[in-house]
Length: 396
Image (cartoon, rainbow, N blue to C red):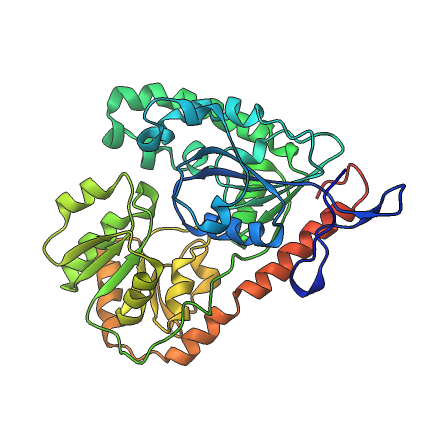
């Protein structure tokens, strides 16, 4: 017997109810699929809300490092792939990328009526049973297979010969990614920018539901901004943290960096004494850093970017590259400064200007409130319910 339907926020039912022969109302069994669970970043914040909305859902993931995500996610029944059992997976799970297609295809989802994948890599290609619906909340088509190969696997990153060996592997992965794009009945993108990428690489349309920012937790304080700039980011190549490090040195402005990742050692080698690596402090400490900073810096092209909204929720402006998701979250001259030129010099100039420009914290906060959690819950639940209610075989 299926699980009874559960009430969600504002009295919503978990999916369209259906009546069993005995007259009892039953709801669909739901599987949540997420690429990997190794830390709490933007995608995991979205997954956390889906776990809250659908508390009886089971979770499928390639790798789960126990204790690395929130209690809400940890409480889900978790199904892991065979990648979990490979050597040194805690440190080197990304190195097993060529095995990910086989890993996602081995998940058994036959008992489920609805699959909701939150994907930036391979998990959008899980195989759902023919009667089930699959909605993919797409964080982005996988960057390293499509348009960021050099940033991750170029000769200057991994060496000349490893780069040559990896190129055909990533080309095959891109072909597989495109060929399996029809496994999702519907795509919901995190931004208009990602919707355009989905159209380009998958030839699929996508609705847009912006991710949520927790405007209750991230809020202004009485303190004024200190004389330092802040980065909150995974330390991976495409984030272009190296550009911000060089720019802060040119601008003569202290920089604090929150986050971890494979780029940390290289960044520390190039950073001077005015750059501080904070690691991964608790959320309350990150909030305090937002509140005390002069501004947040976003030097790379983001698919959406939740950190700029967290900073704005705290009333702090943002300096961002005028590309990607920042164009949808930062209002130039009102909630921050958008930089057209990706050079060190242009970013350094914007850093100097943000230290002296007078921004209205109330206006900055009001912009962030447009992206609140309740709005996200309503919009994503509506997409899910619409997907379940559509006739069989419907593709968006």
